[in-house]
Length: 423
Ligand code: SR1
Ligand code: MG
Image 1 (cartoon, rainbow, N blue to C red):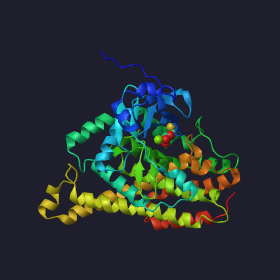
Image 2 (tube, protein in one colour):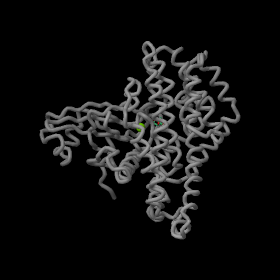
Image 3 (tube, rainbow, N blue to C red):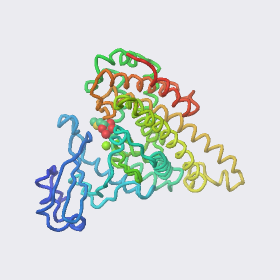
Image 4 (cartoon, rainbow, N blue to C red):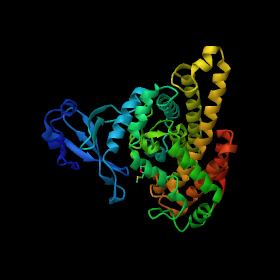
C-alpha cells in the first residue's frame, strides 16, 4: 500500500500552493508564497521547467510529463525518467564536484526535481549561436566526461556497487529506446516523424539512405550502444545540456542516464561542436564568424585532449576496480603493461567516439529532434548548405572511423568542406 498522490502536472498558478510548504523552497525563496512569481521556461523536448522567484531568491522546479512534450500525449513516456535523472545527478556531483546543479528536493511520485537556479548562466547552444567564445568549456567538458565516465565504470567502482547501479539504471528502457530509434535507425529510413530541409536536402538524404556501408556502421554503433554496458552515461550530452558563463560550466538534464559505452557521451558532445561549426555561416554577418569557427575546432581538440589526459591520470591513480587490476601489472613491476592496456582502451574509445559523433550529426538533420544551430537559420537555402556539409562529415566519421588517426585530420576536412560550394 502506498499513499502516493496521483500525478498532476504543475502550472504557474498552482505551483506556489503545491510546493509552498517545502522547507527547502521556503528557505531559498522566502516564506511568503503569495509573492512567488512562477514562469514556465522549458524549451526542451520532454519536460516542464519553472523558474520560481520569491523575496529571497530563485529556484528551478523541473517536472517530467507522462508523454513526450515535443510530440504530445500520443507518445507516452514514463515519469520514472525523473528518478533516473535525480540518481544520475547525485552520482555526477560526487564524480565531478561542482559540475552539476545542486539538488534541493526530489519527489518521485510527482516526478519533480527542485534545484539550484543557475545565474547568469545560459544554455551553451544559445551562446554558440550568438558567436560567444567560452574560454573554459573545452577543459571543463573534457574533465567532466573523463571523471564521470571513468568513475562510474568497472575500472574504478567496487564490482557489487557497479552491478547494483547497472541494475538500477537498466530500467530506463523507454529513454534508451528513444535513442536507439532516433539516433541509430530512424535517420536511415523514411521513419514517420522524420523531417529535413526539403527539397534542398532530398538528394543527399536519398543517397545516405541507400548507403549500405553507412547503414551497417550505424547498426554496429547501435549494437555497441545497447550491449556495451561500460559506465553510467549522461546519455544526452549535447550543447543544450550544458549551461555556461565565461567562468563556469554546468551539465544538466541526465534523464537518459544508463550504462553504455564510454565513447557515447564523448562522441555526442564533440558532434555538437562540429554542427555548431557548420552552422556558423547561417549566423554570420559580413564574414564575422571566422574566429568562431577556429575556436569551435579548437574546443573539439581540447575536449578530447583533456579527456585523454584526465582518463590517463585516473587510470594511473584510481584504477581500483576489477578491470585491468593492478595485481597483474603495477604490483608486479609491469608499469608498461598497464600503459599498453590504457592505449588499447583509449584507442577503442577514440574509434567508437567518432562513429557516435557521425550518427549524432545525422540524426539532428534527418530525424525528429533537430537542433537550434541549424533550425534558427531562416533562409532555407543557407541552412541546407550548412546541413549538407555536416551530413558529409557525419558520413565520413561513421564509415571511416577506424582509419582516422587525428582530430587535426578531421578538422582540416571540416575546413575543406566549409569552403566547398554545394547545392
Ligand atoms: C523524443 S525526445 C527527442 C530528443 O530530445 C532529447 O533531448 C533527446 O536528445 C532525444 O533524442
Ligand atoms: Mg534534455
